[in-house]
Image (cartoon, rainbow, N blue to C red; front, side, top):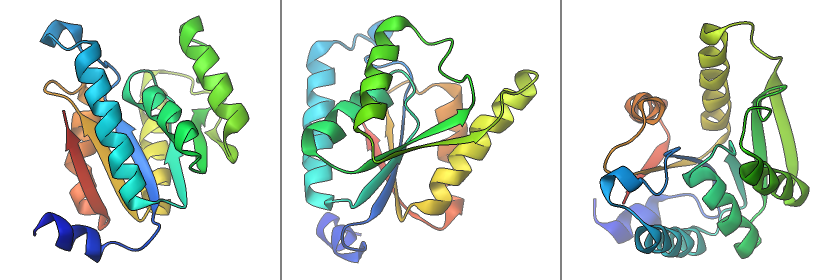
Amino acid sequence: MMEQEFFDSLEKNPIIGIFGNTIFPNKSMGEGIKEKSEVISELTKLLVRLEPRKVYIIPTKGVNLTSLMVLRYLQISYTIVNPYTGYFNGIQNRDKLKIVTGMEESSSVITIGKKPKNARGTVQALSDTEDFIIERSELIISIVGAKPDKKLQNLNKKLPESGKSVIFFKY
């Protein structure tokens, strides 16, 4: 499908779910400030074109935290989806500040569940949170670099089966 036809086929002002790499920029792949700036610019252009009425996002480190800044800059309504109580406890302080600022400016914050008891529970909680976002979104944007993390690879495999329109934004 041609690009314009794809955009014409989308619902106007869609509800969007955003997912992305947790390592961004990936310095081991030679990515730096230039690549990060280019992704921010292209994501900004895409969101301006789509004019979403709402965005759901898990504020994980990497692309998603950067996306929060873009959403705030564009004044797009967004909901932070927290997988479980205590999810942000292990996050680095510099990222916590971005998350707190993002929470303060979000339209809402949703916490899906209680703190898991083990690693398997953590994986399930993240999967449940992804499903929550997918179910409520009309369009999914997956922002992926040359070497996506394992969680994003697994998510990207299940997205086409969701029945939702998906944009795989590769950088």
